Length: 488
Image (tube, rainbow, N blue to C red; front, side):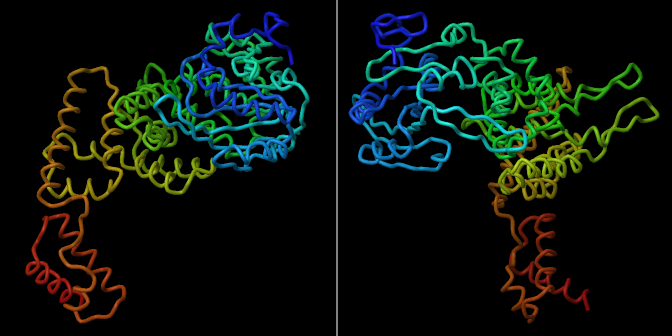
């Protein structure tokens, strides 16, 4: 390990590089840990994304370290020091820990990962990396995905190590690989998606040679597990600039392998069959949905915005009058959404929510511009259920017309719907619409045992409730008896 007196352009001490000062904000906890490693005969360095984010002024509570200590030695050092230790990634050389500390008057909880120097490569038929441990930090840094993630601060000496020009690339806001991009992507094809994700997260440009390698090697993403692909896609979609990353996935052909429904939205247009560019429309809807988020990035809303029109290519029809129609694309799209999200191993609850939003995103337009009846409002709220707020945002975001008059009219119409919902919610407790009689009351009144008839009666009363609003007990009993008599 070079020390502060052996300075080269890629190894700088704190005094010689202001770039080192920002990472040292976490020095109390980092130096304490580093001394423990040093006393045990090992080296420790802050590395990768932690150094990058610190230099960008966006370092959070997650700290990544690298060391020459093997995982079992790391465990021996961490267990008496940390407040919690976990071994989930130990097969890949990573040990996790939590350390609570006080910085000034602020209590902080650090999430720490310590990874043994390593190199990893994929067999062409394997979905899992083969891990081999290394002996030097230089060897560890060269196997990192991008130069901006291949910087380190050796501790406790506080020496900045940058053998691949990551600091210059950080200043230029460009993503390059430490070695050739072909070698890097061959080691781990998921790095191609990480390029798109970092472009979206950091608003960086991807170097031309990296883009070319992504195009040439896009098919290699197929050996990566669906779970890893999904996790990278989530980070991209939840980033500040998802359009930038998604566009890169489409441009390089990666989207054809991980989310083929997205490039399929680039429908051909000709002078006789003009219609809105569905692909561009989708990206605008995503950005407009983001602008309506009130409590941080919302994965379900963003996925629904991204996928809401994926049923259009399958339902496109050219009408005799020259128009283009997409009848029932929301129903087809909901089924496609469920299939794609299931293939990417998304949780069932999220698959259900996003598919439902896609299915309902046109419901508002189905009522035209006329006045919404109380019955229509109740059914809208009932069908949306807990997704109502997201459905509001998705529906508003779906208006991308450049016709200001039309956009204003749609906005006013939806304002009116929300006002009607608010009025009925205040009057009728719409959030929990149920019949005026419950199952036990139905069985008592009809003198029947549990069975299909009770469910049918309940459904009938629910329809009456949706159509007419609260009926009151006596009116509901009379309606139930009338229904029951008609069944005989």
